[in-house]
Amino acid sequence: MGKRIALIGSAPSSVALAPYDDQSWTIWACSPGARPHVKRANAYFEIHLWEPEKPWFSQEYRDYLRNFQGPVFTLAPVPDVPNATPYPKEAMIEKYGPWFFSSTLSWMFALALEQEGIEEIGLWGVDMSAAEEWNFQRSGCHFFIWEAQKRGIKVTVPQQSDLLRPPPLYGLCELDPMHQKLLARK
Image 1: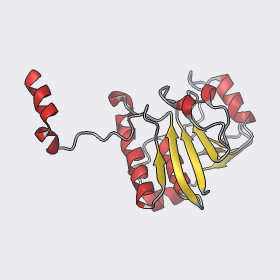
Image 2: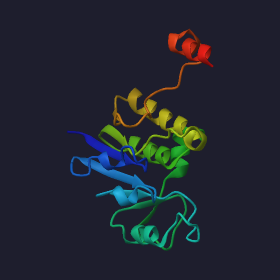
Image 3: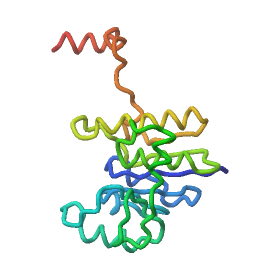
Image 4: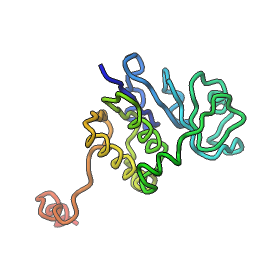
């Protein structure tokens, strides 16, 4: 069996459904919101500016990262975290361009694509469905999903996530009977 990497976000719809008990999956997680649900992780990603005074950057979360037994990927050095590991951002930007690194999951996905022998990448706790807050981040995930599929890498997303539900296609959506019905109702 080839290498399988589960990328874990914090969306409540599926974060608890990740294959934590299946040792054939390498688990990469991110976000203080995911941490309470993550049963095990091989790597953690914290690419935000290290700002311990911010409310979401709780003491409990900082302690978790400080004591994490695997690499904690960061974009800048974090002296408070002994396992802080520099993310190869320049190499990833050079390879994939600067346009689609729109979320932590995008950075994680790019690095997963670079792993030797990778055959499957799964995303749990990743919806990006709240249009106002995460809509701009969806395109990055979609880009890396497409990159994986072009390389023959299987992408697994639980049905609870709407990440793989594409938006209506511009122009073509107007031909859809449901679109016409909703437009008439409006």
